[in-house]
Length: 104
Image 1 (cartoon, rainbow, N blue to C red):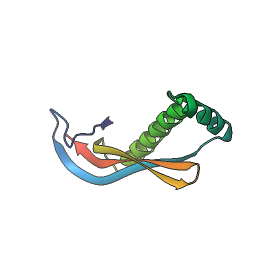
Image 2 (cartoon, rainbow, N blue to C red):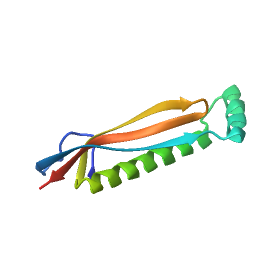
Image 3 (cartoon, rainbow, N blue to C red):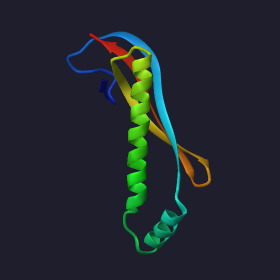
Image 4 (tube, helix red, strand yellow):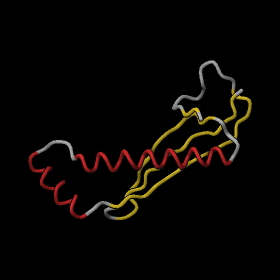
C-alpha cells in the first residue's frame, strides 16, 4: 500500500478514486505520567512518555486507515492528513484520513 501526503504518486496513474478512508484511535493519559509531566513542565524539556504515546497513536490510526482502504478496494492512499481533538479531559483522538485510490 502506497501512502502519501501528496495528491499524486510520481510515475503512477490514478485509474479510480475510491473516496475517503480513515482510521482513528482514542488514548487516555495515565495519572502517573501526568505527575511526571507536571514535574517536567517545571524544569522544561521533552515529555518523552507523551511523545511515545502520540507516536504509537499515529501508527495505530495509520494502520486502521490502511485497513479501511484495503476493504474498499484501494491500493494506495493520497492526500493523507492527521488531526487530533480532545474527546474529554485526559483523552484525545488521533484521526488519519486520506483519499483511497487505485493506481495503475
